Structures are given as C-alpha cells and as structure tokens.
Image 1 (cartoon, rainbow, N blue to C red):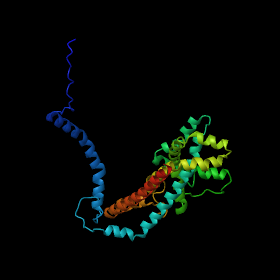
Image 2 (tube, rainbow, N blue to C red; image 1 turned 120 degrees about the horizontal axis):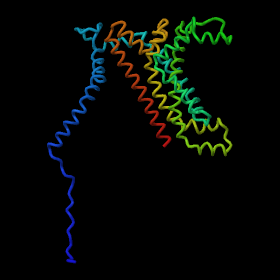
Image 3 (cartoon, rainbow, N blue to C red; image 1 turned 180 degrees about the vertical axis):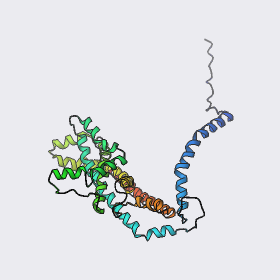
Image 4 (cartoon, rainbow, N blue to C red; image 1 turned 135 degrees about the vertical axis):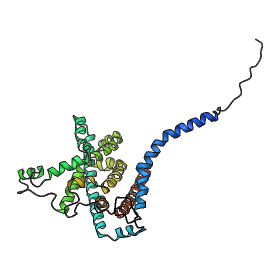
Amino acid sequence: MSGAVVAPAPLTGPQKRPWRVRTREARFATMLLIPSVVVVFGIVLYPILRTLYTSFFDVESALPGDFPFVGLENYGKIIGDGAVWSAVGRTAYFTFFSTALEIGLGIGLAVLLNAPLRLRWLFRAIVVLPWALPTIVNAQMWRFILNSEYGALNALLTQLHIIDTYQSWLGSPFLALNMVALADVWKNTPLVAFFLLAGLQTIPSDLHEAAVVDGASVWQRFWRITMPLLKSSILVVLVLRTIEAFKVFDIIYVMTRGGPANGTQSIAYFTYVRAFSDQNFGYGSALSYLIVIVILVLAVFYIRALRSTTANEI
C-alpha cells in the first residue's frame, strides 16, 4: 500500500440550467396555460365584469346600443321594490323549510345506512337514486304526481280515504311553495345523508361500546356521542344546502313557472323574469349582484361558525 490519502471531491450545488433551456420551458408552460386562462376569463371573469358594468346602465334591449348611464339608480330601485322583498321572503321560507327537512331526514337516513343491516349495499344504491335524477326530470315527475286531475298523490290519498276529492296541490300560492319545497327535499335528502354517513363512519366504535358497558340507552348514545361528533359534518352540509336552496330556480321553472300569483317566485326566478322576460337587463344585473352579496355573507357566516366548531373540538 502506498499510504496515499485520496482527497474527497469538492461539494457543488445544483447546476444551473442553461438560459435557453429555461426560456423554452417557460414558453411551453405558458402555451399550456393559455387555454385555461382563456376559458376562465371567457366563462367566469368576463360575464361577472360585464354584468357589473350593465348594472350601472338602463339597458332595455339585448341588442347593442347606446344606453343611458344611471349609476346606482338600479340598486336604489331594488331596495324600494316591494316585489323584491316578497320574493326574498319566499326564498327565505323555502331555504329554511327545505334545508331543515333535508338535514333532519338526512340524519335519520344516514344512521340507517350506517347500521349493520342485511343487503345494506342495495339499500344505499336505492337511496341514491333520487339525487342521481336530473333536476328537470325530478321536477317534471313531481308535476305529474301532484296533478289535480290524474296525479298519483290524489289517487293514493283517495284510496286511503284521507281525502274525498282530488286536490289542486299547485293551485294556491302557499301550498304550491310547500309542494315545490317537498320535491326539492325528495331529491337532495340522499346527498345530505351520504355526507353525514361519511361523518358517522369517522366516529370510533369504541365510544359506543364503552357507553353500552356503562348502561347508556340508544337515545343517550345518539345525543351524547353521535350528534356532538357529527356537528362539523352537519355544518358543512348546512353551508352547501343553504346556498343552493337560496339560488333555487330550475325546479320552480319546471313545476310552476313562479305561479300561481307569483306564489313560488324565488329571488332567482324573479331576477330571471325582470332581466329576460321584461327585458330590463340593467335592473336584473343589479339584482344578480345583490344576490351574490347575500350569498357571500351567508357563506362567510357559516365558514366562521364551522371554524369555531372545529377549534372547539381540537
């Protein structure tokens, strides 16, 4: 052995790539991003900005033209319009009624879906069917069911001797609003149930087993273990369903077209009528922006409540 010591190779940092390679990669990345930027701007940003611009003008035609600038006048008209507040009241009732029923029924359905039943997989597949139906199909189906001359609901209740004569379920404003809400509940309750089922499956079974050993009843385990640990999931569903219910439009359009006597006209449907049927695009644009602001306020309120609940659990 010669006894010579080999010096270690000097440490070097990551080699810098040539300027041409980096430029070529940047151009390639830009080309990949251009289609998505065009789509986002064309479908999302441009309509939003165009609607805001239109809300400051007295636009009464869909055709291009010179329309007078009115500033915030459209917003002032909305605040003083009694029909707007009536539509807001109906929307608030629809939102509260449908969301409360969906969450109440969804909790019960989720508990059933989580129970160790035979053919549970088949039960879950059947439950999801209403939600899988398109909203238009669901609305048309309920329109047939509630028909005053040949509807299935009238036939069922008559056969059971609950009513003597066929009823016009969509014939009076308040009753029609409740029927539309029930159709919405029938469609969206499975979605709520599956959200809550996911929350139920995160609850450790050890807690229920320990409670059984301590002699807790089924109701005590439900109220003291299941419900507190399900609170975060319920709040998430509450956020989603409240915002969706506040924007309700399509099911009303198919079932009642806002009638009778505007009794089922939600704020979204009212905006559609003002903007497109009455050709008052400036007023409709301003109303759309106010709806967005209300929904943002609701979303912020619910998100803060959700964060508060999560922090308390931690």
